[in-house]
Image (cartoon, rainbow over all chains, first blue to last red; front, side):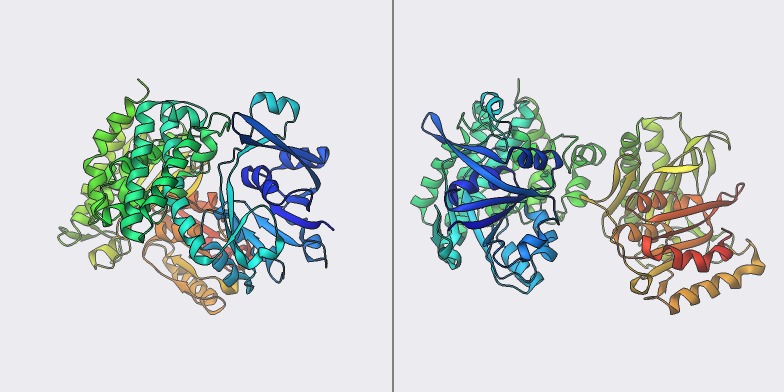
Length: 369
Length: 265
């Protein structure tokens, strides 16, 4: 008998990738999605197709959808005995904590596919339940598809062929994934956070500076690709020195990531990867945090800092962090770093960023020329 | 300039002024009393004010300006739109080295503030907002979380000595009444920071009788855009005095019901 899976977030990971992990042949799918238009399309259609890039082409998977709920509508089903066998969250770290009320008191596993490894323990504290586990979808998934595929099905979505690492506490669920120990999850997470997330968003911000639409287009620009590859090397060195990760593993991981970023079949929009720059620029996150860690173990984060500057230059009026451009242009570099980025003037990274500010600004300005 | 550009201009002016305040924090010159013992001015107020005027003039020197120290710098008293500037809100705190003061700049259109910037240079916190844009502190959008009045901390600012002196006791009575039925009422010494803290969720509300418009203009915008209920009334056009109440939604009736008579609403 099929299990019932409820997925919070019908976006890139929730709709594009999770069905390849928990196949529709074994799981009934329902979603919770706050986007009114997407919700309507899913309920009207009752299905969608996700495509996985394989070699030079795609493999397709049709996914029937029982229902796509608006946030709050799913609670009765979630609390009904046998209503839901497992929950997956793929809504972004900022939104997970808002699910506290909905998920309190549940006994079923909640698999957090989020870019924040602290979320399961935060949710456990918030709800009093320890059924939250961390998962790492080591995959790049677009939130859309090529025009050709969208013409066939407007809900088409593309993912690459990746690996999903899930805490082995929920291995009874089965599925197409790797259930691993805490130690392995930690290793994979460090690699994903610093060898994937850091260069990936840098590629997006450089792409925005270039004015291109998709991430692979950014990687087709030699200077941009050079900065991305350089940032990746800086992170590899940091992981070896700081976290004692195996050098052959990190080098293999870096090579794999560069190939993925170059995948022309993915159609991953820059705007998706670059979204919410302030979140990515948080002091303990993939840009400022990463640069600080590198500097702390003697690795000069020259390319990461160029990527950080590209993030400062990001302009998108429809992004929640649309005000970054206005703040950068209204404040001196020193005040912007101090007040907005919250770096202390006595920090080495603050000094490094300030002294390289004009040079990086000029180099990014000439990127598209 | 559109609202976002006005907000950018105010940020450009407010932050360097805050820096100047901190540079002189341990060596400010001349303290002079104005209307009362609580109403003092330092040389730093004037330096910071001149700096702000200079920066705003550099962006657009056609806009009317009203400041605390110099009054109507440019533009007639009936100008429909103008900057209002308080280069140092919380001067008594400043001169006594109580680290709670700020720079406050607002843009007023047709009698209402529509853009506001408050910079607290002690904590390097920048509060800013504009109609059509939203309210923010540093990187973060401000959205008030509602709570009942018995869970709220409030703050009050009092009128100057010369405004309705016979009714001063009503303000103290109001302070005590709300203090006894809530988590308490503070008197922080900075009306602008009270409103910023309301917008940020630290306070459940604040009010003031006959306060200077430049003290509260920016804060009223920011608090309102963050979701506070706000009401204000000009009580002396010549002296630019305004009474106001601003609270989280659930504390509105609690405060208004008690304060309306005292504040003249």
